Image (cartoon, rainbow, N blue to C red; front, side, top):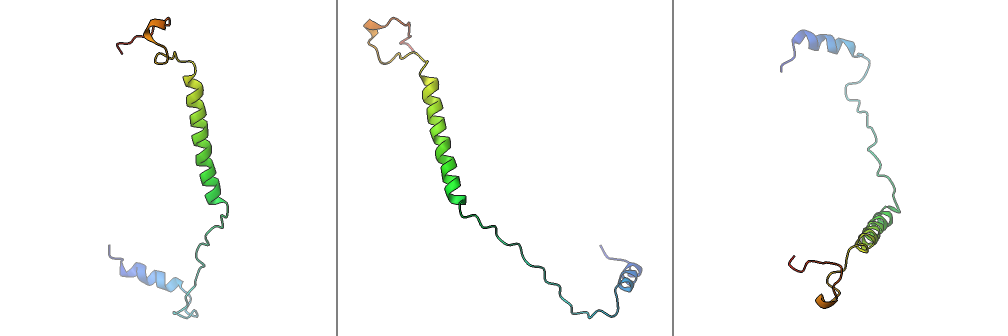
Length: 83
């Protein structure tokens, strides 16, 4: 899109003539955040998630009938062997 010459002339008229044209305003770049505990917290969170998932799986599995631990002659809980 090409700007109209009249728009460019109006925009340049708004700029002060006393300012030198080669002024460069340097803004500082973003500073990286200092996170000394970031790695430890990340790995600790992962370890805690694994522990909780293991505990929850063990706790939920405790209520299931243990069909494979008993012999078929001692079976009284009605586990189906065909499955």
